[in-house]
Image (cartoon, rainbow, N blue to C red; front, top):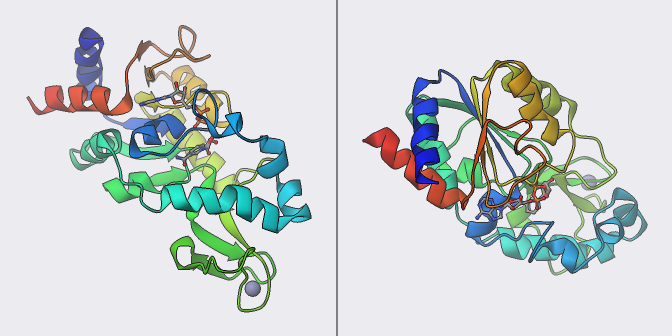
Length: 246
Ligand code: NAD
Ligand code: ZN
């Protein structure tokens, strides 16, 4: 693994334009569980029953009680870990331009990245399903479930439920960024959710090196990625940053 960390640092050093694609795995060390796999949310609940737009529209109180309230409790206190901080340092030193994230937790921005494409939206904001008014999730009065806007409309998080479309702007910009980078770091994503999982394929087709950082192999491993560094996001990023500094 250490040899691959040295190789990744060299590849980043030689690159002009690095992009990162991140998923739930990068935030596990910040205390946020992933969806899939061990300890994942889907071990405890059926996504179609709680995280589908039809479920929310049918019974918003149930989805607020069983999914959104719990997400707020986990996300509110979460802080960036060394993997997020490493990516922010990579931006500061002029290497990394854009982070494309499937996460809704806002931790890349909290770490200091300034160009973050939130592919699945953001949990930091709510909007009214009636008048569209927006407010911060941290300001929502949780005494009444489902919480409502001043107009009486039900609030919902500004991230997408299953069954909803990815914002067009996010897809378009992500594709541009993926096609124009020369190194893509793919971190903490199982690469099972489309269309995000296709971005590394697009990067590679356009000549980029694709470096995976994930404890487990994924469908990209051995096909799309040039190599995988099997380890936790923070440990690998700390290793890469130490070599770039030195
Ligand atoms: P996923 O849950 O499908 O997979 C997580 C991946 O992270 C796995 O491949 C796992 O091996 C890897 N991983 C585990 N520990 C890690 C570590 N310490 N460092 C790096 N990687 C580690 O995640 P996904 O691919 O992002 O897709 C799931 C969907 O879930 C996304 O659409 C996302 O919107 C949503 N989601 C977001 C959050 C969040 O905002 N933090 C949390 C849960 C789910
Ligand atoms: Zn309203």
